[in-house]
Image (cartoon, rainbow, N blue to C red):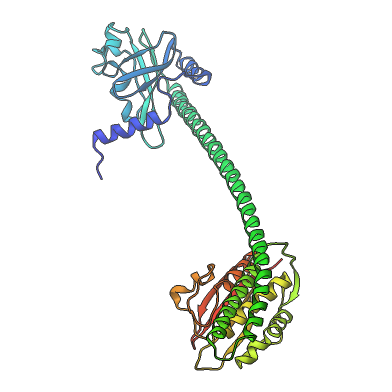
Length: 418
């Protein structure tokens, strides 16, 4: 692709301004380089010129008072973009320079003139290292070579200054981001503390309310039983009492579920090595009545691993999952439930698989939310799987539901290593 003159000039000016040296103090190092250039050439005058859109800026000078002049008046601006070292013994006799105001006396009376262009590694001309005299003169090859070297030193100093500025900007940005991150961490810590406090108060509230409700409901249930015994068989009054008793039973089950949920999130999680098989057997024992009533087959295979966790909470989790598998059985097949465990990179993945009614794919994520129920039969409150999720998360794990190829659901949860 051919680059137009206008595009080339825009890129050159962008490189010049990127160094951030135009109209800035030269500094001791650049002044020293220009002094050495005058000594190498054996001439009284030297200058470091930078050329922008319209100006020649003499950044630092030796032997005369520098300043700013028009680019159109500059001797260096005539050939600096070619990238070649230029020198003439007597500019007043040179066709290129003899009418320049720096030669004619309008600005100066330059005779000897030499210019080493300042070319970046990308090929952009920034200006020149210029040496001149009011008398004609010459340079030998060694002087020319050293002046070219000094032009390279100037470019290296430009680059070092640019890099120092960029580093300072990066440091300032890093400090700003660090401060923002620190403030974000402080905000997050405060939010977490508030969340923990809120959760603790909520758990305590649920426990207290559930306990205070359970006691009077027990009294109500007792009186309802007595009242029911006083009513004739098949009477309307007795049916009303039966309905009230069932309602009390549902309320008692809900309170029990809420207490389990609150207890699963409160109190310490006392993790230790525990036998998964032993906990599964205990959970099956607790559910023996409902398992026998459903004629369910629950498989706890030998050789289940030792895991790391709170024995009481894991037993409660397994009991909820096995109990759900039996409760939500398929009406046309004998319930079959199996507990298994597989190793992954972080710990154990424990699964409870069944051949029950299954959970539709679109509901498998939301079933772990409080009071979410997909199937309204049999009766339930949608708290059990929320409790299971809370227990898994307290162990640093997660829980999810998947469908089985032959029908039913597999609920899996992870138990990370200590």
